[in-house]
Every structure is written in structure tokens, then in C-alpha cells.
Image 1 (cartoon, rainbow, N blue to C red):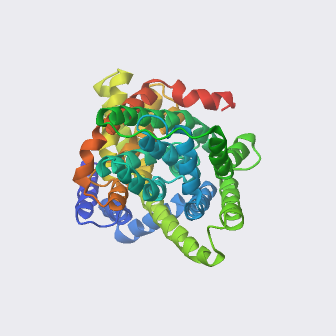
Image 2 (tube, rainbow, N blue to C red):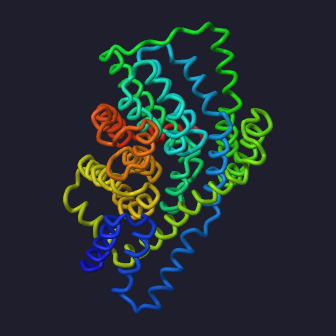
Image 3 (cartoon, rainbow, N blue to C red):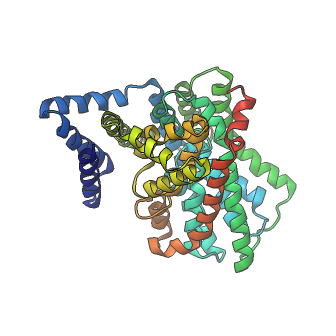
Length: 431
């Protein structure tokens, strides 16, 4: 087993350092480990079977649907209306534009289910405006990146669907509902940091809008926000499954973007479909190779060994959960969320369950933890998108990110040690 772990790690990190795409790193590392145990042809056959089996799931059909609906929403003038709505609601508070940035990312993340999409759509509008109003561009980029991670928790979220499959049967509907309070708590924590930073730096406060204009701006965003209620309401009430909800989200976003707002022209749809196919292919390739790696880890009994070792170290649940969080924070800094969830759920979930944590609670904690990795160098994808939009360097936004990191870590600890934050709302709906 020691040799298997060594080969797996050496091949994976060696390829990663050579800038090989992460799905190839995982797949080739897995294949190399399999070759230690069996001959070439059985290893290749097993690899193919495990990859095909990993994506042979009806629930995964929801991912391409939600990806497509998010892309349509992103191109359909939704971001502008959500920003105007947020401006009407919180623009007059201290650090108004930073707060608008956070709220807009929460809204858009809830609609698109993608932190990268939220960063791109909201950042393209907000970063130039914040710079114009005197905000430091590096701070603005940091706020956008951190706020975009709220969409990983506030449903619909593709990564919660992936966790539901990796955990072996946690309800997608329960995970979706469980994500609301932690996602909102994360957004509020970031807003508090932004308000304090604004007072410290003396950033301008936006003018209070007349009530009539506030109602008008909020009303203009309601059709976009209604998709949240349509999707989640249908899933919770049992009218349709998460996969069917994804299809309905596509139809609704098409009606909104093409028919009502008319921001997307029919001749733009092929390009959107192609982009959706590319994104879906990347995600499914990660799921396929990660499923194969999960299998070889189980075959070598690595999860059982790690679980036994962790439980032997201490019988204090607080300490072990802190250890799991620190390991996942390190993993999130080097690995994309999808493979991290698929690989580390079978390793750490049994430990968490042994400590009395429910799979639902652990899933929310894990997704929140790995969301921090999206804004952590060296791999953080959201961080690079935000830097590209702001036309700044990665190292320049690390310092303004520090108080935001602290806020995210505090929320992570609250979610870890206060189960009610994740479990109370699903319980109200009978989960």
C-alpha cells in the first residue's frame, strides 16, 4: 500500500508541476497505480470501466443543464439587473459598492451555480465602477473573488450534486436547502468586512434612492431571481427531480434572455451551446478520472487506513474536525473542487460519521472549505479570473484578501461546530 500511495502522489504532483490538465494528472496517476497491482490490459480495462461507471448517473444530467442555463443567464443581461437591484438595496450603506458587489455575486451565483461565471459577469460591471469611485482595484478584485464563492453553497450548485453522488446517497434536495444559511452567513460575513474596510479607508457612500426607484429596480430583477424559487420550490415540493429542474431552468432562462429581455439573439445560441458543451466535458472528465482514483484508493484500503490513523490520534471530535478542515484547505489550494470532493469524500466522510456528524452536515462543511480554495493560490481559478478582469497581478490582491480569508475561515468554523446552521432548514422541510 505504501508503494501505491507513493506512485500515486509522485505521478500526480509531477504532472501537475508540468502544467498538465488536472483530469489527465488524476487519470494517469490512477493508471500508474493500477499497473502496480495488475497487468497492463486488466489495468486499462478496469480504468475504462471505472471512468464510464463514474459518469453513468442520472443525477449528473443536471450539471450540463445548469451549466447551460447559467451561460444563458450570464449573456442575457441578468447581471446588470441584479447589480441595479443590489445597488438599490445596499448601495447607501458604508462601503456601498463593495456591498453591492457581494450581494450581486450572491444573487448571480445562486442563479448560475458557478463561481467563475459570477466573477466574470459581476466583475466586468463592478470593477470598473468601483475604480471610478475611488476604490483600490486590488481590493475590488479581492472582494469579487471572495464573494463569488457564495454561489457554491447557495443552490442550484453543481458541486453539491457531485457530493451527493460521492457520498453514496445524500439527498440533492436536502443539500440544496442546507446550503442557504451557510451561503448567506458567508455573504454577511464578507459584507461586514467590506463595511469595516470602507470606514477605515474612507470610501464613499452611495446616495439613498427614492422608494419608487428602489421598487422599480427590485421589480426588474424579480424575473431573474424567480428562477431560484422555481427550481428549488419544484425540487422541495416533489414536482420534479434535480435533473428535471435543470432542464426547466434552461427553458426559463431561454424565455427570459431571448423572449423577454431580448439580450440574447437566436444566432448567438450555437456559440453558447458550444461553450456549455466544453464546460460540461471538462467537468465530466474530472468526475470520470476522479471516480477511477476513488476506486483504486478503496482497492488499496487507503481510506480505511487514514480513518483508523486519524481516530487513533485523538478521540476529541473538535480536534479531528479541525485536522480535516486544515487538510482540505491545503487540498483546495492545489486541486479543483470536483476531483477533491470525489476523492476525499470517501476518505473523510467515514471519519466524520464516526464522530457523530451527519453526511449532510459534512457535505456543506466540505464544500464551504473547498470554496476557499477557489480564491487561494497557486491554483485558485476564481482568483485568476478576477485578476484578469482587474488587469492586476495575483500577488497584488493577496494582502486585501487576508481579512476576507479570515471572515471565510470564521464562517467555516461556525458551520463545522454548529450543526444547526446546515441542518435546521432541511429539517423544517422534512429532510
